[in-house]
Length: 284
Ligand code: CAA
Image (cartoon, rainbow, N blue to C red; front, side):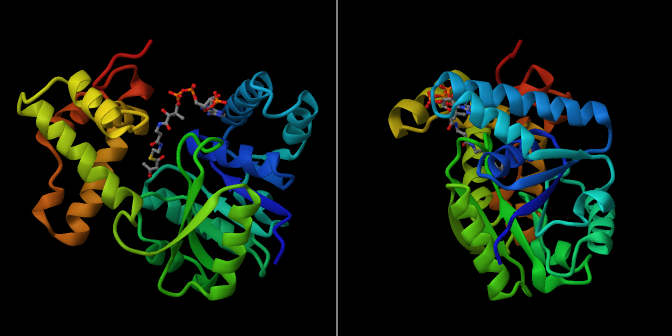
């Protein structure tokens, strides 16, 4: 199947980035939000990120206009998905919320549509089971900032069929991303490998081994990571990191995934990183 039109449900950090890359690669996007104000904010972010690309001469002003012209706003899930080939859900990582959204999307999406979730931590098999077509359900896990990061983790649930995987793989390639196939398992590959590193970095700070700046310097300059693990934790959101660690801890019942006490404390204190202006670093 050739994907010509997608619905992106949710216009937050991940959703607006996902809408941006589909629209920039000539695919019509129905961007679904709950309120016009949230939709306007998502469009503003996309417009600013496109300006950044125009300034760097990666795209032209005309490309920007064309990209924005490929995006239509919907404030109702049912209306947003009724004529699309692919639904990509990028709403917050709350199972009850996803359940509600997927019920509406499953009821209204065309029979041939592929259903994909951008979840970073919830089981694809469990989400697929909420719908009447688990064979057409798959994980399409993008990375932040979506217009920049080159990879999409394509997560096969227990019942995902080969043709669905193949279409999603080709669609990711069309977006100039490298699709990496993985099977459904807690944290998939990305967060199973990334989160223990972030957690261990937080343990070292909590134990007074080094300051956040020094831990980050070790990993940036010693291991050539673009961001140190604590700066990255702030960027991802400390609440998101804690949720994912809990998914790993619960999923494997292995103490090696126990969240660092300092991480729990910071989340309790509302210091969630960039989005609240304070985490391991302060942000204006
Ligand atoms: N849209 C478009 N372009 C963007 C952008 C955006 N939102 N953000 C940055 N860019 C572009 C910049 O314009 C710049 O372009 P050039 O290379 O042409 O100059 C390039 O990206 C680098 O940006 P900056 O120069 O502003 O800053 P930087 O060099 O410090 O890079 C970064 C910023 C790309 C975020 C880099 O620090 C990085 O790669 N960090 C690691 C990010 C990472 O690991 N992300 C994954 C998080 S995990 C996740 O998302 C999933 C999960 O499940 C938790």
